[in-house]
Amino acid sequence: MEVFPSLAHLALLAGVSLGNNESAGKKSSHTNHGYKQTKAVITECAWAASRTKNTYFSQRYKRLATRRDKKRVLVALGHEILKIVYHVLKDKCDYKELWEHYVDDRRKLMQIKYHKEALKNLGVDLPNTQSA
Image (cartoon, rainbow, N blue to C red; front, top):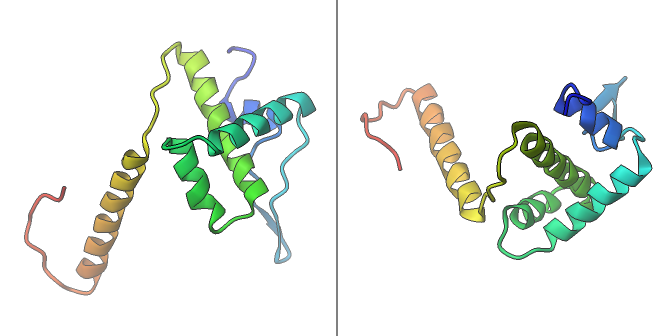
């Protein structure tokens, strides 16, 4: 993987680097062109991963597709798949699937942390207890 110095470089060449550019109040989220064949394969993988049942990618797709355009969600999923492929090849390790309950548990912990901070900012003293 010495050919690609970083994940961002690989994503740029593959054409799935996420864009979030703004100029003069106009927002543009175009992706770069990249290699057409690589981008097509990654997009197909994202489609296939989004249609699997009870996996991290299917849950991620459903969650993002509720508020974003479905094609943009596929670019985001493709970027995540490319991240996984890059790290598996670079670190020479096995891929471990993140199940949907991992995301739900993580979201629950983030909400607890957020609400604790909000209560603290309002001046409410909370007892020092460990949360789940």
